[in-house]
Length: 480
Image (cartoon, rainbow, N blue to C red; front, top):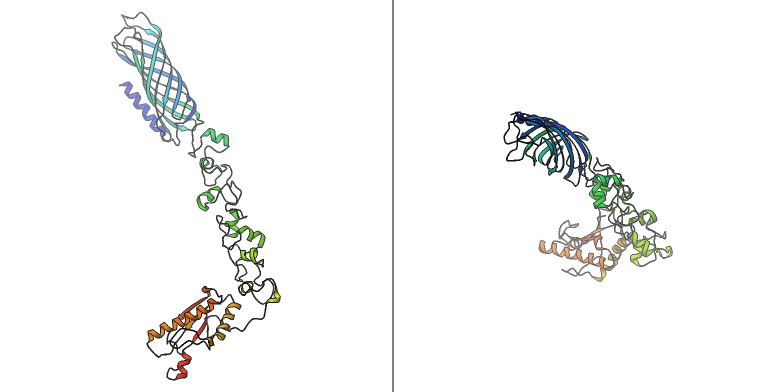
């Protein structure tokens, strides 16, 4: 009963100590401890009683969950008829199979020797050897509970088998043995193989690197030290390994850039400049697709790396700089009367102002308004343009060539003769024919749309021949 009571007390003390536990105890370095408790002899004949026992030990790690322990104890084992002083010396293997936070349950087994001296003999002892040595095999379990860093409360209990029948001074059929229950304090250091901050690096590795073994992300860059060293090959003590103005974690997790390469896309701008200053894409060397790297635009040509045609002359910056040798910052490089893009389209020299002839006749129409192309005619009931229409179509063409920034919609109309659906279809075909003529002369298709409106929106009564002729018209509507 006394033995059971003592074990219950030790267990309750352990539970109280565990309330302060905050970190794993399994991976310890060198440690030492001392404890006290009880011994209960196990012999065949005599009645055994609880006695005192104390033990000290040195423990050192072999591997992640395995340690060796050298210990020595002192105590008594006795009963109603005998009392024997014992000094066990043993070496144990300590296995810690679980990595709980703040609690370390373990198993132990070992071998050693026991020196015994019988102090009180029974009235009729049958043994004649009252002191000496015996082989010893201890096995048992234990629990550690962290109190503060480096100090743990430890309880253990075990069975100790001797190979001697003389411990109670009475020769018996089986060898004498005893059980122990101990509680005490253990002082421990950190194991070089431990990873207290769970960053993927051991204490030994962190010491070599100079990182903080208590903080998973020593440089505060958003990546664990282990990820930096083992996976990304970045510097765990430098938040911005490549010095591009972006933290390693931002590069890896958000921007997908290379944290070891300041200029991931090799465009001449470092990744931080691209994101914070120029707003370009650090993974795309030519953000605007104009044929010039972002770095060339920003540093050499001073063009806008986000705008393919910086000066709005109808030529991409790369074409101007690399092919035509025009100034990508100046819409009319030679200072004549024609934009660079218009000169290239018509075949004149954008670097020679002497070939910039005066503008040809063009239509004067504001954005959002329409003008009738007087003189555009078609074969009766068809969409075929007559030769007589070319003069006015040429003026419309001049307007588009000499003003490359405008866009238009060609609108076709008919009179009210015939079915409405047929007229709508005819008006669309005629508008398409005019659009096709302009595109054939070199105007970009995206600048012109065509729309047939049939007999809608008449500008003259349809009850006279002249009125019907006016309603059969093509309008040049400026959309931009």
